[in-house]
Length: 215
Picture 1 (tube, rainbow, N blue to C red):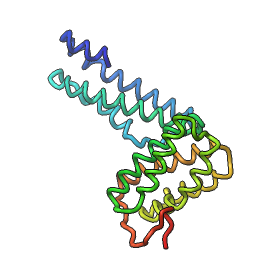
Picture 2: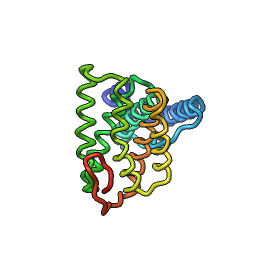
Picture 3: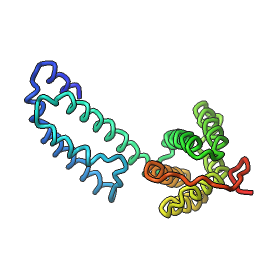
Picture 4: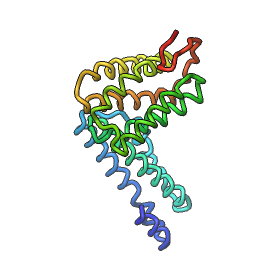
């Protein structure tokens, strides 16, 4: 990206525009290779669409827009690759996954009016305690089980079959190794992220207790 900006500073705009089709081709090939390596990938961030869009910037008059689009694409690729790697199941990825959970449920709590505040607070507390080693990986399975009611409530809100399947996989993972729980947890959150963007949550008329269970 620094090289792209340097080209603009040097007024070598034409050269930069000429490189975009090649960059798009290389990026697409890289993503396809990664898909093969990971036995198929779900493009949750619209990466491939944005890669192909690089080819639409053919006029040096829109070079600034091309750079902005290019920067956005690089950020998406970085986020996507990080998510993919951590999604393979990694104990070291627990903090990443919990931070994603906290951020997603903060937004969900606001948009639905449902009682996810306790989940957000508990997740934040676990993150802080984990960061100073007051809790460790061995505490993660037990912590996840205390949140089961909230995950069930999430599935009920969206009425989404894929999310329901992910939640089932998550609950079954509780009896296995920590890395497996983290992998299932991140898979559930990734699908929640996609569903949350595409489908408005259904406000529930049920009343829930502090653990997310309906009364």
